[in-house]
Image 1: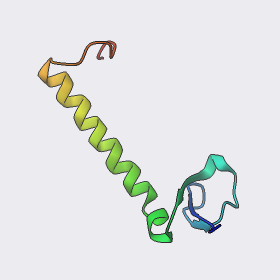
Image 2: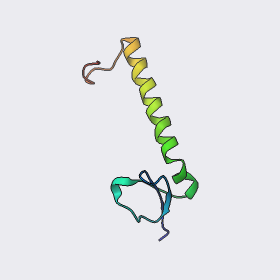
Image 3: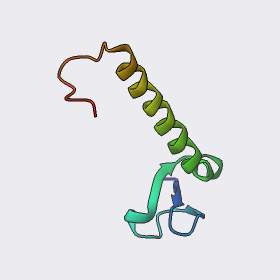
Image 4: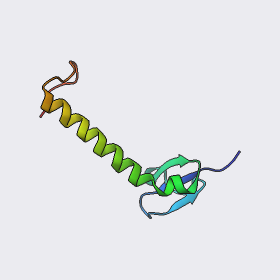
Length: 70
């Protein structure tokens, strides 16, 4: 079995194999490059979700069952 790569949010470093507490790790990733981009990918996804939420709020056509919008 091949070791995976992890991004350590506390140190900002990529780790080969899981060496730190899971509370500080993002992953696993297949490559070191993927792990190094973990925060960027998470940031992009969050921005995309925020834009999607804003679109639903602005359209007034929010799907039912998703609770109130603040």
